[in-house]
Image (cartoon, rainbow, N blue to C red; front, side, top):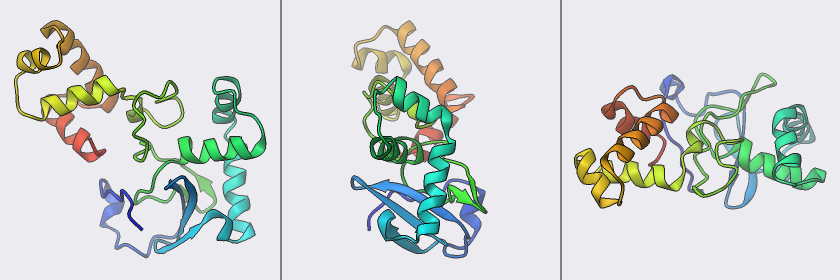
Length: 189
């Protein structure tokens, strides 16, 4: 199975396969679960206990469910659960989302490439708040051009480009351009 497994923090130093936990993830338009570091199962193939643990995490996420109901207009248990699984749980990374019964979703939903989603960044983490223009700006800057040259390439004023770069740096928690580029690469841009 091909996934976007990215090693980007301290837990990456732990040898793969000994992590105890449950990592639900959305892949290829389906719900999946990685258990104990190395066992991959479709959600419906897992034990009833595992399914209940994940369903309880969804039910207890009142903020996300309220957004899914009120802002996205999705109602019904199945629709809510699928949307929560895709937009809150997100893609596979190296840190289990459920460890010792506690749910801690990923800060960045690395599987969603729908940069024009009107709900982007609301459920899927701060870094996912990047819109298509932000991603276009980062990709242009990665070519090594100056801000002025990049602004010209994407038909933006230099002042507008500087402002956009500052907003993107703030979204990604990057204090300078070097860390912005490193952070962008780290999250798959």
